[in-house]
Amino acid sequence: MVWSIIPIENFPNNAIAIIFNILFIIFFIIEISIIRRIKKYKPRNGKTKDKGSFFIVMLGIFIPLVYSFVIAYNDVGQFSFNTSYLGLLLMAAGFGLRQWSIKTLGRFFTPIVSVHSDHKLIQSGPYKYMRHPSYTGLFLELVGVAFALSNLFATITVMIFFLPAIMYRIMVEEYLLGEHFGKNYESYKQRTKRLIPFVY
View 1 (cartoon, helix red, strand yellow):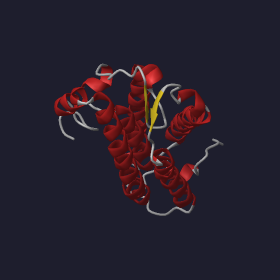
View 2 (cartoon, one colour; view 1 turned 90 degrees about the vertical axis):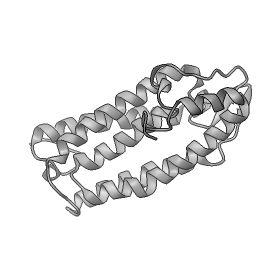
View 3 (cartoon, helix red, strand yellow; view 1 turned 30 degrees about the vertical axis):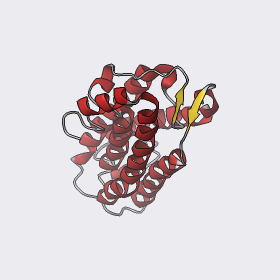
């Protein structure tokens, strides 16, 4: 008998269920650790103008995840099991991109929208092509969870709640960065895309 945080019936086989559980638990532990150490990420000298975006993004993550689990337990909204394999790939890709982005930013990574007094405009790694790759990674993780569960309603919920939340966050963040870096940030915006390289 395979233990799973989601009923086994939501997956095509036990192996997929095991991989899903491992990936999800890793994601959960890392994201919770970031939230718990939020004071560590606040700049000692600089500006903080989050405008509630952290709380809004948390809701944009929490609501789709809880809803996905509830409908998975009630066997509602399932479609082809083929999406489970794609879902796991999206989860892994999103995780890799998000962690790469956070590592690239280093001490400039802050869950609360803020800038350090000595803030540098990072344009290397994934930031060479996207201005918000960590959010792209987070989106892939959430969509990956919905696809791994092979659930249409879960996928729609991610779109309805997470996308507006992250777009608000981006608006707040880009305003502060533009205010801080001025023309340098405007030039950077012209060379890059928000979330998808060469597209958007």
